[in-house]
Length: 124
Image: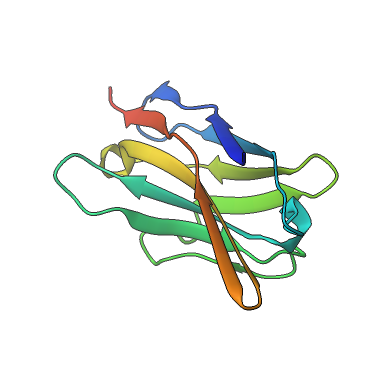
């Protein structure tokens, strides 16, 4: 049973920083952490879940929406089966539950997994 366990959320003042971690375990069926593209999503109350960062399986490429570009950095350590999200210059509008996502295609199957989420609150 695949588990993605997020940590590192909490309360931070505007302008502050947090680093989220997501550690994966339990992969089977030829799927490993190293074969997965990893992403962070967030969902604020009353809003749809949105992508905030993604990174390829090798870590060679990352993508960010304009809302976080230049402030958030995604990285991964394939030796530790862990993906990180460094969040700097946090704003109140970054307040949300942040979710870790793993996705891979092992033809003809697609596999997608979600963590349980970690709360990030940006407030003075």
